[in-house]
Length: 395
Image (tube, rainbow, N blue to C red):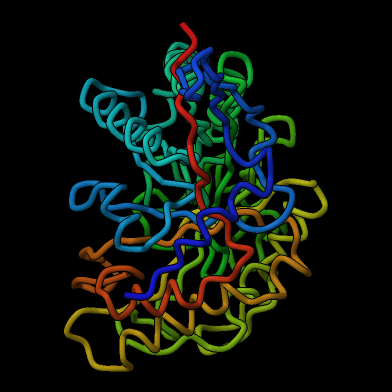
């Protein structure tokens, strides 16, 4: 298979890219390396000066990070892991295992925290305990970015459409991280606003509630696509280190499930609030990149992205669909004209999707044909994990 192993070295272009580990020569004539304390990078400076971090949402139950890197031919600069929060014993064990794999791989751990019991469970004790754990990870050479309660503007999660409680909980997480784990950072990541206010979900804000009033940004007494899908949920510049947004190609029209090639320019149009296409007129959606990346000087991430290929459904060839989407992610105008975009993570899962009523294979490296095409198209400015030097946690 064709592999882009040379791209691994490109990740070392920015010194601020990852936490680094140092080494010292011994006194022998043959130079040896002995572990020394890892150098903990500033969590607020994990974005590269130029280029885009290439990451992956890995299905940990089916594939190790090493296996994925072997199939791709490059080691991702960012690896995503999900966890319930507050952390239970099983969550801690899973997180320790993810940390160990990222430590061996190199790169950054993007930890997505899901408060399935509700936002009231996000206490200071819980966030301080998390930060203490992540500080240990940082000292072992693994920087961490915490994406807390993602897609909070949706109505499908227990933390959804509760702007005041969400902002307060996010700020508790941020306070603990900034105080106790300076090698870690926060990420605020709503869902793309097309289709907002996502009526019909179990956790949608209801008329007559304080949450409904807060989300009615145009004060007309109803929630519609004219209301701002992002601003009511923003926790504040001091609490947010990264901004991000989930952006997928689900197809062109509802109901989802038909395998179709994404329209040209769709990814960038959605990121910048300029989409008006087969999926609908989304011109009321704000320009996320400009308002939360450029204006606030925050690094922008796409923590999840992929293109829908529904198993067993009619439509276009798998490679044609996925390649049309990733080539939009690889467009040379992105690093040139959108320099705040610093991270893109492919969703490497083959899973059942409720919206489709069946399995969807989102993977780019799920078979040799797509893996070869994906790696062949990777641009030089996509950054992968650099070589790690031996080091050990300090204390």
